[in-house]
Image (tube, rainbow, N blue to C red; front, side, top):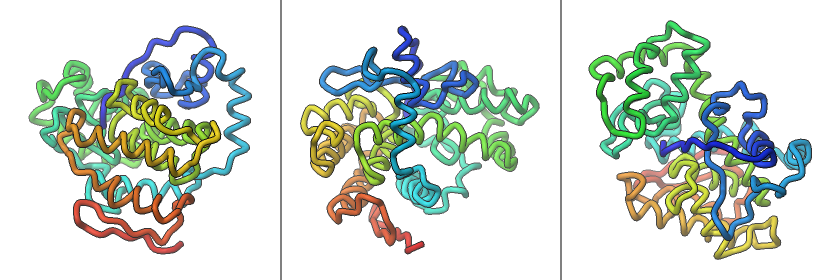
Length: 306
């Protein structure tokens, strides 16, 4: 996936809110040492700004009172299948744990269920975290090389054995679970929690999650938070009294524009927006309820009723 920016937090209110939204409050998670970026652009309400939230308990209580939305098991499964259709042209996201290849997009090796990349820090976070609990895993010898190539597309120190080591590691249920955990900590949980604070329902939560996966949690114009900031300048989010559909259309417009620039990813196809998310939004399926039918790169995918 895209770069997971390291952030040095200053000020207790920011630290507290970050812990709530990003799930690193106990200091033991993979993101405790490398917390993700937060929305700091002008124009958008910043739930992590000093004074924006009174305390951790207040935020947790607010979120806990909300419907589970995309975090409900059946909805989370739908989200995983939708993302897999966009990232790997399959609904069988569980078949992707052992996949690894260089897509030629400048991010080095892309691997696993969410496209962890050797050049964008999330793969490094995954292997570092997994190695702490499984020091003898097949990927542990490659940690020095992963640290060296972080931020580049280089394979130096990884070839020729890294791909085989990844595939071997993925045979372990523990490594598959580790991929699930890091996916949730870096992408799923932050996106869903922030979407809820922005007043978005299940579909909106998925829109945020997919954008977080594709664009990464960056604060510049091409990152998730930059896109959110631009959308909020065009339309009010529901928590500010705005119309949910209008706001989501503004957000999708921004996400689509970033895809078309090709600055973040070599892929400029906007199917995930044009013939998937826009379809659900146009149909008014704000709960992301099946049956669902969408097209990705010209191929039709379907999720039947429960």
